[in-house]
Image (cartoon, rainbow, N blue to C red):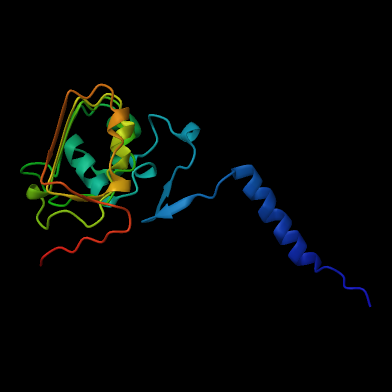
Length: 182
């Protein structure tokens, strides 16, 4: 007896393949927000939450712009020229786990990341690699953070960088696990 393919299953698989082909890549959902996957989908009116997945980073950027998180757009991010993380005297006293979305701060020329200003220090394995995607950056200061070497920014991409200050920065080879003294 010849096996007949299950028509319903074939139809469902065909629809899924067609949808995947149209969309190209699946959308990623984090914290009830859709994160844009294609740069061509992003405009000045795109909500910040679509390009900045880290909620702490969203809060820091919104606080810097003096707007609620849900009101900040990619166009707003482009207006930031100086950013201190966490903001001195600000409400958010934590550091983000990663800086995905920082590349939309395309007029940023000064960035200061200081774990000493964070209430609970820096998160383990913080990812700073996206900082290399800010060609306008002229002054970068990072202090008191553990960063695995593969998550460090490629400083050679920062061609306008005049000042680089790294204080109490701990880096390690890939696979090394840093244990904080608690």
